[in-house]
Image (cartoon, rainbow, N blue to C red):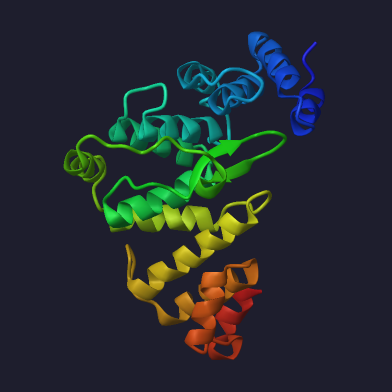
Length: 250
């Protein structure tokens, strides 16, 4: 019988073949989490031959589970053309589904994508769930060679897949700022900083000096190095806030 904790321990100790076999057993019994993890093994070639096309089918089975990690990984498959035809619009569709299901990586990505009006290469190129939500950063994961036969066409497709929308960017940054920081403290702090920046820059909302200062202090306290630098550079202190704002900061 499939036991997630036993499979996770096997994976973490480097016995990928056994872990993949156990995740497959779980997936066959209808366990969405096991399906996700087996898809991950296929995607990263852990204990089984690299097969992104088959990985997508296993991610798809888990695509409506709370958290949105499966949809995020499918978005990455479409972004990089792994196992599927590269398709930035489909990437955006899955990113939206992922963000709606609660994935903070997708929420932050969409905030930036709506700000720039472009499907760009993200820092987080995948998400693992072994044993829990873990973002995979660009520097840690081997990528495809990135060769694009027609760079200008690719650039056009990236910009045509999404339109600038300051209001949407603001809403996704706000959602990310309010995300539960469990497992993703660094990303939660980043969300708080970017949400504060919206009130600094008037992005999707009105410029608000005091609110931006309060939110920036909250982002600094959450661990954002960008917020800490902003606070120092602009000489922001809690004493500058009104009593009401100080109470909100607490």
